Length: 363
Image (cartoon, rainbow, N blue to C red):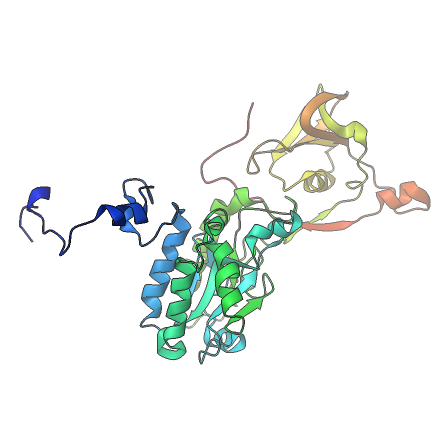
């Protein structure tokens, strides 16, 4: 407080000299920019920033009975719901289990990427030392400094890999593994919703919308917190990425190869909209009587005005990254293939949010 910082030569020296043997033991590889390797305990390679959360988790578990950790792309759908029933269901309430997590959302499973491990570490419920004892602190320490130094676990996906290969393997009776989304993790988590960075298909979920969806979830949460005590209106669940937009998708699933990589000739544009995928763009065209066809620009940014409704066009020409198709007339559901194609068919999709930082796509 008010004292000028001492020069390096005036700082207190350690009680013993830093021997060359210690320097060789700790190695000289940088841990992170600006920090030498002697800031860590052992000969471990550099690690990514996600490892830092484990130190904070261990620090808090020393004095708190329970801890909920969520990544920055996680939000609570119903902030008024208490956590004790969930802690009871997962075995954490009285410390019988130490960690509760949910399985990985499909992207890694679909790619058969075993590095993702059993669980996603972006949403964690933990029991602390006051009820679980020192064992949970030891488990976190082993998570931070894996036994046997399996340096391969320090690569993608960082600490998530070590959660399975170190903690779950060493303490099989101390963790609870849930299915994704019930109620933790995944973009469709019932309580703790995790807008992850991958997707099985853009029609279901697109990670490029995460920022806009998180902003809407924040506004929804603030509305819930500011709700007057005498209000009788039902509480609003914060689920901005839910598939709640219904469209008539008749004629949208019978795509032919001739419509791929095409753009309209001499088009008369009726409007430009945002659509989750080509089927949703087709459904938007079906909703407008004046629409004669549509073009979906699937290589454009996901939040761009990527769906072009056409009032008229004279044909198509080759263009990579676009799909153009004429609107299929509704036939009233008569007999035969044409009647089946023209019958109304409902589909649900999410409402594509406008980008927070304006982007309409390439010219």
